[in-house]
Length: 222
Image (cartoon, rainbow, N blue to C red; front, side, top):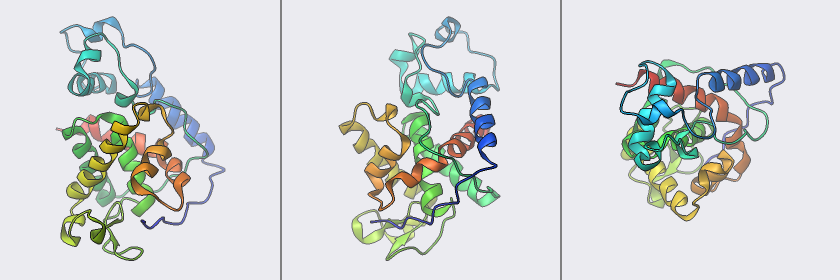
């Protein structure tokens, strides 16, 4: 239904970079399993300007009942499950970062959590390399290569990153409602549940970089 861009070449020399990136996310508190520390459940806010503090604040917004118990559910983690397959990386310019920011902001405004933001960013990386292109297979347009004649919106709307992200995330929410354990599935499963691509596993290769981008964005978001 949507254009699947050519897969980036499998990385060889980048595998160490993937390992280092994943380790950095773990050390920063971006990839943690189980309950948060007891102090996170108190009214005293954690030290500012750390990813753990930001993640805990977002957890209070999306899952206050669990946050009150010091629990961070998979939906509020960047990488709640192991990545599926080799990872790819692309250079990120200012326009791409701005588009990723629009996606992450929309996910958080919709109270969908960090994992939904990562899924959305990774999907846009596969579909358009985070470039807001005005072309695609057939009548596909924009970051998510959505088709205006399939009910996603007008061509003008689909070229608005915030609108396109909202449309993708709205469909993702529908997928999540019918799949209660979506946050514990591989990333490609949720992405494919919305996109119905001819290359369903292609989304998986962008998971680590999408998590890095999301982490960076939420740390600088005002």
